[in-house]
Image 1 (tube, rainbow, N blue to C red):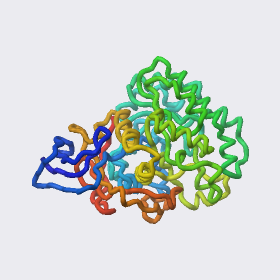
Image 2: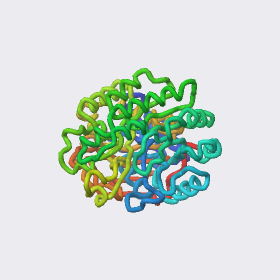
Image 3: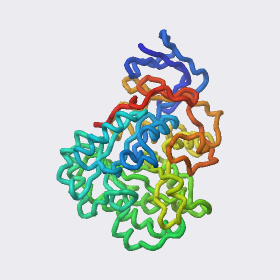
Length: 427
């Protein structure tokens, strides 16, 4: 064995004092006592599975002022995220074999953490999905227009899902109905206006279309960033192959409590009422929601410091997701078992990758945390290129050590590996 690590392990919903044996990047043994020449004892600190974020926008290629794979993946690593899956609405967008190969090369050269890449489904490439499948980790469908999005008309949704179903790869859906969005379109001067223009009806309509269009299909379909009570109720009786995710910003904010710097909280789908927020927490704690996802979508401060109507939608979150949720766990808002299930185990299962658990045969991806060491989240201590966070001043519990495939990549807030350490997964 290359390495053994001793500490308080979180496995099967319980803590146990024990040792992890690692060889060639995999967990090969879990025992009460295990010693190798290279042995690390983390004392009473917790050893938790590292997180997996199925929804990031690292803006690479095309928007280097906002983010790139180097800075985005560093932010992920410092937040305890071992693997990210990047969305296709870059420039150029990942809709062809060529752009898919080019983006894969960029990520392979820059990423600190393991990564997957999605291809977008458009009217133009809907007949070439089978050709793209061997090169991507899954497919993204935008039913409503959003920042740099590649909106697919809803009348093509059934065909698109049948094509992705043939590949056995996951299809992820931005569920806002475009016709509904256009019907509500108006000038936006505030977050309340943004909420009115992107009403819960638009999310509910799109989700119903996904459920109808995926009827009889078996491959996974994922509803991204659920935000509303109406959407939640529509999904209560969802088919088994449909999963749903929720973001920290939809769990921690409500529109009526955000009175300053409103452009920085402009996001699609919008931040809604406290009723929506509370029902999403109910869904999390009753495991009616399947995963956490950050929807990390940074813009620069200059881009956000404009009139509300022209400000871009999106906010950063990959580095703060796990620390925020650990802090919420400490306050009793969520159990650690639910947190690990939704942030580690289920994302790994959805993407069919050997991660997300401290179990023999899995990648040795985990982090070390001290729950007593909560600290205020500040932008100056984060690593996204955008330089700000909507969670300024919130409490977060950050890892002191992070391992990916048995390699220590973070130690005491220092990064120990070079860009390019991350590996392409999920293909």
